[in-house]
Image 1: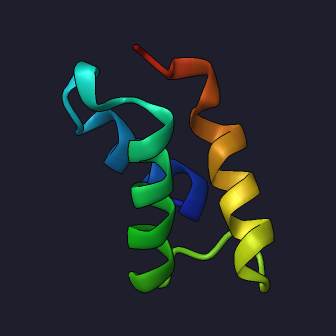
Image 2: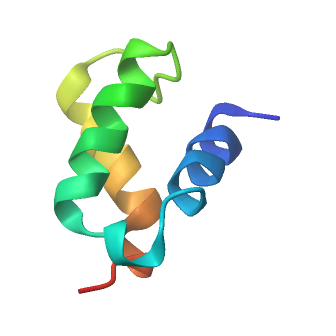
Length: 59
């Protein structure tokens, strides 16, 4: 499984009501700390994570 798939898996493991922009920021932090880095620079990583999960935001 690649890093993007793993991040999506972590995202979909959250309850639907937790799939918010604030939770996406937390997910990006968790992924970074777990070594699931989509970019070398943290801000770019956060943007890529947001791009992955933004279409699924609820609430």
